[in-house]
Length: 160
Image (spheres, rainbow, N blue to C red):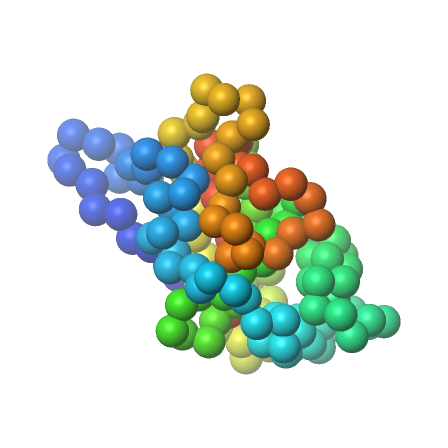
């Protein structure tokens, strides 16, 4: 599985556990999100995924497509968030979770690659906020039907 962000670790740290980033906003900065994601680009990527996973899309709305698609593939345990990576033409689908992506994420990536689509993944722990509201993503940079706050301690996602 390819990794979007590779963290270097010292000899004292467990090589399997990446270092914990200061906050969710710092993780989003490392992923390099644009200020406003392109819904046209999101819809295009969703149609590619739908073809690979043989999922029918009954909507032309980018958000509805993504929500339906990722509900069917079940790779995220928590609410889906969608963003665009700056200067790459890539879409980032991610979730704020308590635990790593695991088997479902690996199967998703394998299916994408078999279908001819190169996918990068990330699983980055960050310091959980003491504030119950968590930390919000920069306004307009993330599309979600749920709240923007991130508080669970780990961002897991795919980039395509």
